[in-house]
Length: 132
Image (cartoon, rainbow, N blue to C red; front, top):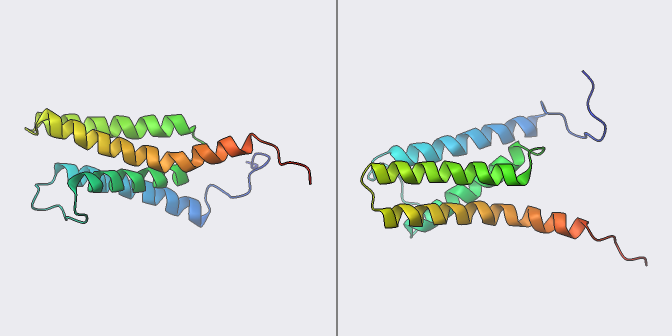
């Protein structure tokens, strides 16, 4: 099967495979951290919400790298749905609704922060360079 025109890097290239592996590992780590007892999850940052933000920021960056042809909106919506599912699960397990909502907001902030440089770069590409 031939590569589509304009493709510069193969889907089976080392970086592409590592990006997909990183994507899967970040989702697995977030899932395991959300179902593990509190004493078992490491405290990496000073704030619980910063940990949520950072986890979803890293995961969204991995998702962007792993799915270069997938529309940005679809990636963002997938992560937001994943975060909402985790927050609902934590609420069902006894977490207060206020904390579950704050967790989701921190998760959403991480996703949006990871997506924003891509959106800005796409916006910048709309403008042709000025003639010198």
